[in-house]
Length: 375
Image 1 (cartoon, rainbow, N blue to C red):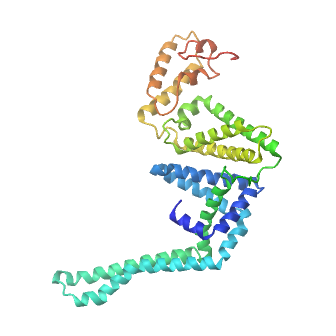
Image 2 (cartoon, rainbow, N blue to C red):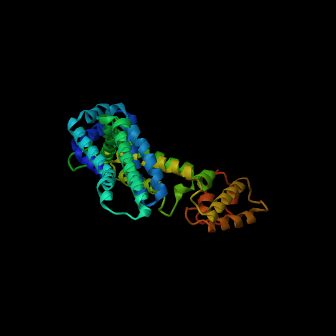
């Protein structure tokens, strides 16, 4: 959390609590989805902070969702309270004036030098004409910077509404993080945002895990996506923040669902539902990032190997067990696999493809291949 976020949050703890409660109890599915998305992107932004390029992308992407949530009608009345808070507006105005005075200090110092210091100092002839011009230039530039700052605060951002415009998304982001925390205070429970009783919600969490696993299964059986367009989703280096967030979310959701039973307390059920929301958002964020990146962040050697591997697997899909070129194709695939180290690829991925001929699969170097039930 930045210093500015910390200051704004501390100045409005009650408002943050009210926004948090509104986001937790809303029945609007769009607001609920936006809340989870904002919280997830904030976590991704934090995880990507070590990588300058990834951090810039994550921050820009997170800001887009924060602005969308901040503009929703469900929070309009609370935003108006921020605009109408005269005490806070007065405090912000004092801070803006203090910033203006601070930025004007350099210009004032230059003017003081021109009127009081230069007349009392005997300058060399080479500097007597140049130094006053330099001091005047510094005073003008310092004053221009202060004026531009004032225009930004009071004209372009329009006074009270401008100050609220700057602070409101920060408050909403903090509230979204609070509202989507899976861990709740003992004994307080949590308010379910989805309709239905605990049994229905428990089934929803279980179904969400099954649906997410189905999404991964479809991805795994799409060679073009697996090798060419979205290999970042199965990165093994731990440096892709969106992939790490997705894997963590899936691990947490699977553990929470496994612990559910018929008599699970409401806190466990609600936590599982929250984690299901987090996992879906993490999946979409990781998937979007993978599509955007493609193979661009891989080394030239790995990029070429993955591209070649995609072509060879497509070749296998049209081959039969008696293909005379099968041995050469297998050797090429083995060389490609040996050159790929940052994403998980193996013969097991290839032999699991339903498009391959059963007799051909028996000739591939993959141990423990289960052919039962294959067509």
